[in-house]
Length: 220
Length: 336
Image (tube, rainbow over all chains, first blue to last red; front, side):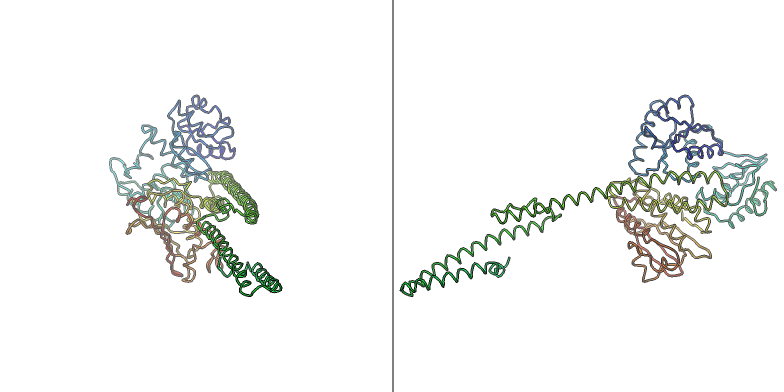
């Protein structure tokens, strides 16, 4: 998936591209803003992050220009959080509206949600590691024809570990990810959940899937 | 104007009249005019003088009363000279001109001050929007370089952001009606957003967060309520107890609306301080002894609640915790 970042602040532009690249998106970052609609046609991104305050032209006008030619998902990003701006953004055909400063995980969640809505066929609804499959919407884990159901908290934890296969996931990262998903679990509760996930997995014959690195975190 | 006051003003005229009468009496007496005839002449004089005074008093009194009544009706009293009757005497006209000149200078002052205030307010809003860009930049930089250090920076950054928003909402709260965007919002969505914006501070202080799930909605301005909730969460963290701090969010239907309770188990507020926590600049024992406090946070919250039609109240016991309750009214604004 390719994301176009239209932003005049250089630091934010660079850091946003790092963030997007790190999360598996490819990016394009135009630096001249008046001909964005032409660049949209040539670069064919899947989603646009559009700042409202740009030098020379404002994001609302750009949005109207882009909308004439394409129905590509557009997220407005602004530091002016007046309600008129938000209304204006929606009227000009923006799909979402985020105010600065933004929490990186919330920004990513909005992007994921919008992409899933706009391109429903290109999303897998499961993750796999070796022969283990986890379906994030139902929370069911399949292994060699057998299945076990995880609670919401448990399936979120396992999903995050599956997304970072082969990497050491620090406990703090896991807790933050759960908080981003509105599950307010502390460090102690995390250990309890991991224990439960292990016992549930062993019911269907999956052992030693989650490794513990003492004092660091977990790894799949 | 009382009759006695009028008579006092006319004292000199009265004395002159009496002296005139005495002089005339003496003069006529030297001319050997009969006493009865002198008395008749004096009586005619007296009758004329009394008649004049009576009419003069009635006229003046009527004008003054009418001007006072007009003054009473005016919302901006300094505009009186624009609406009052133009006096018909030369003396009155002189005073009227003086009043007009004073008012003109006053009006100029008032509009200059209004303009200055507006300019300053615009600058404050502009400044806040500008400072949001570097805040956003620091936020993404931290997200891209996760570490113990970045989470420390982020939790301080959240404070800066809240202070900036405090200033923004304070500047806006006196003309709030203009900036409302009232929509139907799920209450728990606003709660989750407020928690997300305070994530680092909550995590770093090991605060246990509990949101009772519910699907109630209200009609309100989402951003304003989120700011209020953010402020309440920040307060709860600042005045937490050190052992096992907890914040609990509860949404329950009540008679005539919906109540959102933010309850902590912190150090609480003393009975003496409790009635004044929403006052401007009030810091109380907690603010003075324990932590620095500006006394602006809850004051701004209360102002915003008043504008939004939300009833806000607090309950607290020292060492047990504090509950802040936001009551959203039902009816045209709320659907329960």
